[in-house]
Length: 423
Image 1 (cartoon, one colour):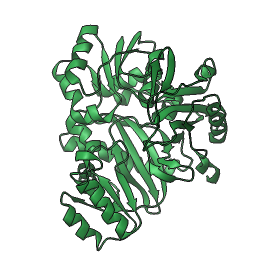
Image 2 (image 1 turned 180 degrees about the horizontal axis):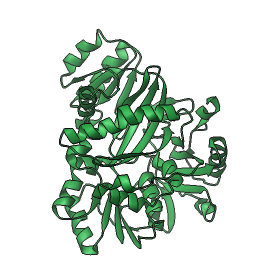
Image 3 (image 1 turned 90 degrees about the vertical axis):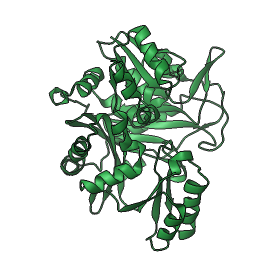
């Protein structure tokens, strides 16, 4: 069969790598793709938001299945456009992708169906938000309602910070129209855990757990980024916590979306906080996490095409979803200065070091081909992933592999997965 993957980052590279392992697939396309994805797929210069061009391309090439990696096209309604033309596509429709597209919607859904989450209020008026802050308990969390590349969340320790944050999100529009509405919620403390899951509208099958590192600097300092690294599984996500989440969070979310007339098919990413009062939902995403996909997919044993098709057809209950009894760690190699200002176009060396090395992977996030060489083309450049018998072994392997790669402004965190030492 022929498969099209939509997107251009490390997540899409991991998806392409996994799809290429399926014996059912003999041709992969990626739009627009990147230099690493080109190893597995024919990259085509069509943007992720060019729905009509993408649909025409699928028809021209007689592509059997399209897989959407990114949030923007899902929230924008690409699945609806494809389905209306009789094209097979993996991902939620627009009315279900709102689970990620609007934080106010998802918080209201959780409140209505008693799904554990932080207390909150939503605002469309900046003055009302500022007035609310005068009586709010600090620290407090401000969230732009819409999509903001994983960066539209501010944790404010003082009233001054919080009021400046309201101005930044709602008045200065730092995150564009994503800040037209804003959620203010209580600050929760505890371990953060990410659990990705496959959903077919009624059945949900969680994948293995993972934990992301959002801050740019060691020790969780600096600005929020799209993710500087991740590890899987989380040692803090126990069987007891999993059982609680299955009963009170995962299945209730799927059932709630169905009851609202928004049946969800695709990936639900649960961002969880393991609080003293039990697990609570921090956020939902409607697609694979990035870089979580880079540690979860290397541990997945089941044919991913089989799972994608079962989600589309509503037969996920018949799939045996299996993961290896090992661990994986991903360290993101970024351009120095990310997420603010950084140089592009710098030659990357050492990529061929990964060829033929089982358990070591390099996923391209921001790269390009230039004059026959692979160069940097983004803030997050590469995701260096390694597996191991346990987390400590995987972490040691990943940091060994980081040294195989060089480019002029290479920057990375040195403490990805350090929390495992405390487990």
